[in-house]
Image 1 (tube, rainbow over the protein chains, first blue to last red):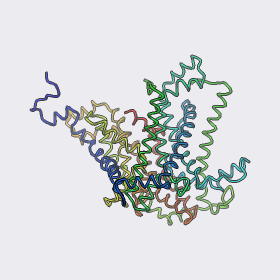
Image 2 (cartoon, rainbow over the protein chains, first blue to last red):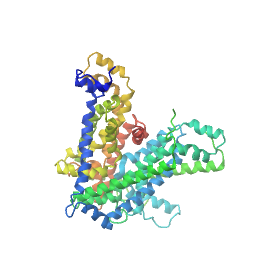
Image 3 (cartoon, one colour):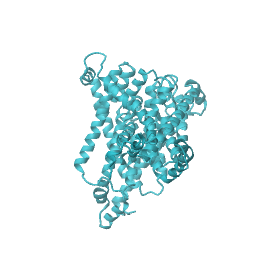
Image 4 (tube, each protein chain N blue to C red):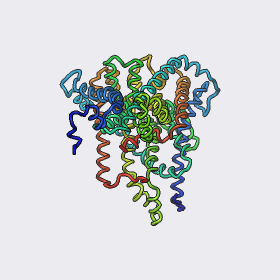
Length: 299
Length: 280
C-alpha cells in the first residue's frame, strides 16, 4: 500500500503536481491572480509603506499629523455621521419593502426601476439632484404647492444633499440585496408558523428575522462601506469645506492638491482601517446576539 | 402566500407601498428634471421652461468635446471588457474545475477588490501608476478599471462553468483537443450566455465607474462620467442646460447598455453577486 505522501520518485513531477490539482488548466488562474497581486495587493502594501515615509518628520509623522489636526481627524466623524444613519435607514426601509415585494409575481419592473440609480452612478444622481432639490426645483415647489412648507427647503450644499443622494443610490442596492436573501428563505417555515397561529409581527420576529440576520449583516457591511467611501456627491451636493468634508475628500486633496502621496496613502489606510473596524464590530456583535444556523436554505 | 386581513396589516401594506411610490416618484422626477432642463430655453422660477430648444446639445457637444470624450469612453470600455473577459474567463474555469492548494486564498484575492470601495484602493493604485508613468494615459485608466472587473468576471463565471457537464470536456480531451481547442470549440460556445452576461455587466459598470477613472485619467483620457463631474464641479462657467444636455447623453449611453444587459440578466444579479461571493 502506498500513500500519496510517499510517491516513488520515478513518477514525473507533472504527474505528482497533477495529483495535487496543479496542471496546465490550473495555470489559467495565474494571469488573473498575478494581475490582482500586481495592481491591488502591491499598491496597497506600497501605500502602507509609503504612509510611513512622510515628507517631513519621523516614521509615524503622517498619522500623528492626521490625529492632531481636527480638520483631518474630524473627517472620520463627519463620514461616520453620514454613512451610519444612511445605512441604517436603508436597511430599515429595505426589509419591510422586500418582505412585501417578494410575494409579487411581477417583481421585474420594480427591480428594473430600482437598478437605474445604481447604474447611473453617484455623479449623475448628484447632477440631477442639484436641479431637482434646488430652491426653484420641483421638490420644494411641489411641497409649497401642497401647502406643507412656506419657503423652499435648504437641501443643497449641506448635510441633507449628500444624505439624500446616498439614500437614492444606496437604498436600491440595499433593497435588491435584501430581496435576494429573502427569496432564499423557505416559505414553508413561515406558513408553518402561520398555521400555528403566529401573527405577522411574530412571524417576522421569530421566523424571518433570525434567518435573515446573517444576510442583513452582510448587506449592512456592503452598504456601509459604499456609503463611507462617498466622494462625488459630497463634493457636488455637500459643503466639501465644512459639514460634508468626508475622509475621501481629505485623501483626494492630499494626493492631488498638495501632491503629498505619502499623506494621501496614510489617509487611505486610515479609511480602510475604519471601514474594517465597523465591519468587524458588526460581525462580532452579530455573533454575540445570534448563534445558530446562519441560513435557512430551500434545501 | 399568507393573507393578513386585519386593519393594521392593511394600513402597514399601504404605508409600504406609499414609501416605494414616493421613492420612485422622486427618482423619476429627478431624471425628468434633467431631461426637461436640457431642452429648455430659459427655466427660472416656473414649473416648466418658457420655451423649448435643442441647441444645448450642439453647444454641449462642442463645449465639452463630447465627440472625443465618447470615443475615449468607448475605447476604454471595450478594452476593459475584452481584457477582463480574456483574463477572467480562463481563471474562472480553473477555479471551478480544479482543487489546488491555496485555492481559498486565491478566492479571497478575487473577493477583496470587489469588497473594498474603489476610492480606498484607488488612491494607492493611482500613486503606483503615477510613479510608473502610466497614469494620465489610456493605459492607466484601463489598468485601473480592470482591477474590479477581472475578479467580477471570475466570480460571475464560476457558477456558469460548474453547470457544464465535465464529460463533454473529457470527450473533447479523448479526441485529442488541446486546451486552446477545448476553449475555442467547446467551452466558449457553451459558456456564451454567461460570458455575454458577465461582460455586459462589466460594460455598464465601467461606463459608470467614476472613482478609478477620475483618479487615474489625464486630460486626454477622461471618460464621459469624469467629464460630467468636472463640468458640474465647475458649474457657473457653463450654462446649466448645457451640462444637463451632457448628462442626458451620459444617461442614454448608460441606460441603452443596461436595457441590453437586462435581456440577459436579472436586475438583482447586478448587486446580488455579493451573495454568491459569501457562499464560498
